[in-house]
Image 1 (tube, rainbow, N blue to C red):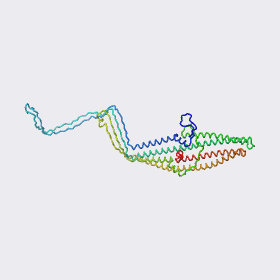
Image 2 (image 1 turned 180 degrees about the horizontal axis):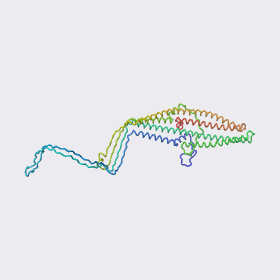
Image 3 (image 1 turned 45 degrees about the horizontal axis):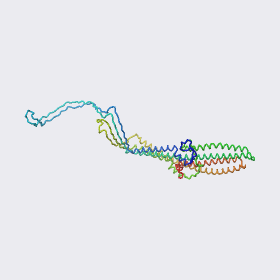
Image 4 (image 1 turned 90 degrees about the vertical axis):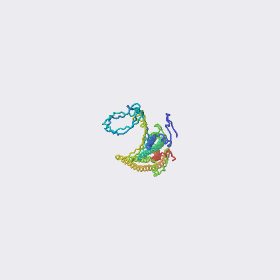
Amino acid sequence: MYCSGQSTSGTSAVPLNQTLTLQACLQLGMEKNHSRPASQFAVAMAEAQHRQAMAGYWPQLNGKGGVTRMDEPLNFVFPASQMYIPAQSVAIPGGQAMVTIPANAFGPGFPPGNVQMPVAFPGQTVTTSVQQFPIPAQTVRLMNPTNSLAEGDFKWLLVDGGMRHGYREQALGAIGVAKANVHRTDLELTDSVTRLYYGAVLARQLHHLGTDTLERMEATLRVTDSLYKEGAGTVTKADYLDNKVMVETVRSMVAPLEKNEASAEAALAYTIGLSWNSTVVPADAEVPYIPYAGKLEELVATAYEFNPDWETIDAGMRALEGARLTAESGHYPKIALTGELHRMWNSYNGGLSTPQNRTGWTVGAGIEIPIFDGFLTSAKVAEARARIGKLKQEKLLLKEGIGLQIRDLFLGLNAAEKVYQASFDGLTAAREDRDLTTRAYSTGLLTTEKVIRAQLQEALISAEYYKAVYDHRALQSQIELVVGTGIQREINPKH
């Protein structure tokens, strides 16, 4: 890479004026063009969404804790009540019991020691009346105002009817679409840089052609002036003035050609991703003519593999199939495993704040069975299937459209090759004619009109020839854009 100039500020890492080859322009465009990072971020977003979908296959664990302070202790009020006891009779049967009579119970010396004597008692009945006992209201403290709690919960979806698989397919389809957009961005950038590069070459060729034509016609004007002043009358003042008018006309046309060349180089630099005041000068002196060896059927078959629109529609089909699976999961039950673990700290040791209540865990399994949802799930499934059917029809249209587009470009390429050959032959004849007429005119054998016409004819045919070569190369670039292989061919020309 040759750099023909440097930045005057000294702060830019890339020189403002550079002379680059096409491959160098493409490499620089892949590094600096701002459209590529945007499409690559879209891929990163889609991949992140896929990871979100995959998270549904894993158990969900959550933990939380906190300290709360209530204005008053939590309590429970037991309301006042009456305890009613009905009237009842209690029968006490008769019986006999042993009674111990201590010594000297009836006086000194009688009996001399403790005596065990049987005592018989008769049966009896005890009767009570109706009674009511009032029980006042009672306030029971459950826990103290300050309470600390730490807990964790666990959820694991075991059966989902295909819902998670559907979300995963949708995410994978989104990744495919994003990658197809990256591929499209690279292809479009390659096509734009290629056509702008050779467009800058064409603009420079036309500028040089205008300059060379002007120099030749100025030389012819000097010869005309000499023949007019010193000749034998074969060249008149009218011939001189006609030649002068043509010279000035060509001179007025050269200035826009110079501007076009500068604009093309600036546009190339902008497309690559350089600053607005940068200029890229193509290293090639002319647009190369490379006969195209591709076959129409092979190009169409390759397009169905690499065309970014085809890749997009395939990825979209996968995403819609995932949406259908997700919708159909609404018909099936879902089973989940749940769990919870908690630990509480409270300075009160009664009420709810007992050692048994402060720690604990629960494990459970839940099932959700859809019974009737107003035909909502069926409508979602029908919508998903309709979208799939619509995309299938669009795929058929795209298939025919890609083939027709490549066919049109291929026919245009064949026509461009014929135009190239005709303009090449015409240019060869025009150059020979200009050389012969110029030499003959300098000896006074031809009129001024013929030599001017020969010079203008050579310039026009040269411009047509340069344009034909450029059109041929631009059509090749467009074919590679549609087929989807342009980036590989340009950056790796050996392949």
